Amino acid sequence: MIKYNLKCENKHEFESWFSESKEYERLKKKKLIECIFCGSKKIEKSIMSPRILNSKSTKVSENQDLKKFKRDLINVRKFVEKNFEFVEHNFADKIREVYYNKNNKRNIYGVATDKEKEDLKEEGIDLISIPWVEKDN
Image 1 (cartoon, rainbow, N blue to C red):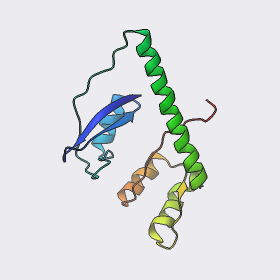
Image 2: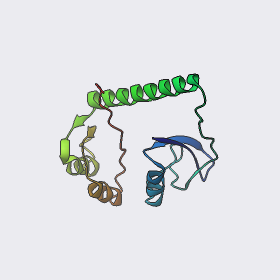
Image 3: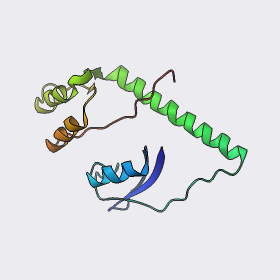
Image 4: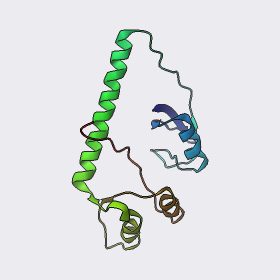
């Protein structure tokens, strides 16, 4: 995982995690990264300094940061599981039902292929992918 400090064209700054630097470039090219404040898709990496491990205390701190990050992701998962309906691999069809039928407002989550995600994006349906951390891992 790599964390980048990002800045939009309106000078809003925020952080985001990526599995690797190539993932950032791929998502940026497809215009799938947007400002969390204004929704702008003109995003650049801002100046950042790498974290250099040079002592045992730094390693402990970094390990604690990773554990906190994992706990946060587990809490997100618990929230989604409690407040959203799992529609399994029918996600693309179900999200269209919710999106196009204004009387069918419900919270859902599920699994979609890259192609399905791309098709939904072209239809104007915005999705959020959440890293799904195993609770007992």
